[in-house]
Length: 378
Image (cartoon, rainbow, N blue to C red; front, side, top):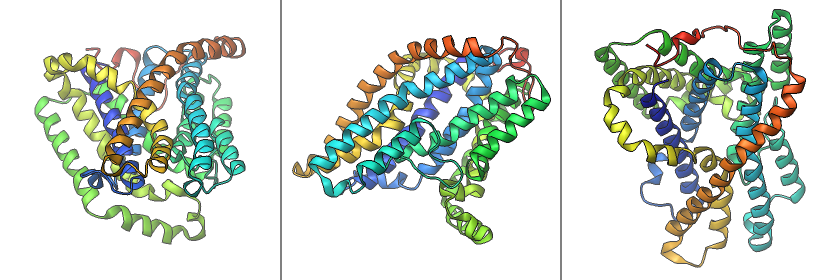
């Protein structure tokens, strides 16, 4: 993957996380900050971007450096738990403090919260019709999807025996249930984007055309009102089965948004290296800020909720103070999580390396390129 493409992906990840932050700040602040209302309906779209980018990045790392199953799983678990552990600890701490200081804003019981925290820790919070994200940290729902996508992709790529591979995929699919599987194709679009971009380099003119058309398509899709209409059509078609689908009830709209996002990414992989000097000048700032993406996503909601609950007396400065304190706290905790990740990876690798045979290595999968075709290797 070229450095320019990697930096562009970092920018998209950061923008998506800030959109989710802005959406929740808009809804949680009694007097929303000016301009945030323009982003208020784009939270689901930002998560769709996360899913597509996740599939692309995972395909890349499996292709280039995580060729052993043990390396892949250790890296995924370390990445998740380096933020999930402090995120859930923060959520529990602020929930207890919130119930003491502002009980009206924390109506859920400690038992309900504890069960949701445990389910999120084990990534079983979204299986089948379950929806058990912590009440004060709703963004955790998406990790209950993505964790299982990691496992499904691992089974596809690392299990050498075909019968074992498909039996494992079927078992994991049965454990996930329809809600998670409905959005799996969106994650797989990222894998497809990596494969297509690795095999085919668009001409610059054609890349500009695809980038503009896909961006225009995304704008028109959002502005058209299709999200509500297609959601209603899905619910009407599925009837009682639609109950409990949660975000997956927007499946048709999410597919359309995911396809356009994928087309945009494929085009931009060709275009961004043309602006090499621009990317190099901003590389340090982009890397530093995008490193906080996961922390922004998982830490912001409980911080916003708690600070809104306890700052009712500071008047017109309430919004700026809440946002500033939230971002500063995220930066501090996110840096601590980054320092935790290498130790977690070593811990997981020491255990997985003993239990997973050395022969479990990445094999060619559907829609994947050969290592020699990796993005940027021309």
